[in-house]
Amino acid sequence: MVVIVRKPSPEEEQEMKNCPTWSCEVSEFEWDFEEEEVCLILEGEATVTYNGEAYQFGAGDYVIFPKGMKCHWSVTKPIKKHYKHND
Image (cartoon, rainbow, N blue to C red; front, side, top):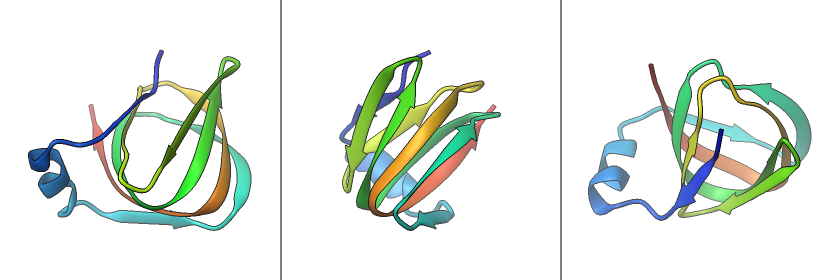
C-alpha cells in the first residue's frame, strides 16, 4: 500500500471542486481508510505515517489513500480538503 501525493491535473482539480469538504485543526489521530479516498488539499499541512513511511502533503496537493490503510495523522497546520471515495 502506497499513498500517492502529486499535483492535480486541471481536470482533476475541476472535478474535486464539486466534492464535499473536510477540515481539521492541528491534532494527531489514528485513521482507517475503509474505501480508497482521493482528496485535494485546499489549506494546511499534514503528515500521514503508514508502516514507518511518512507522507507529507499540503495546500495544492492531490492525495490518494488506498483502501484498507490504517495510519497515523499529524496535522501541523489546520487542514481543509475536498474529498471523494472510490470503491
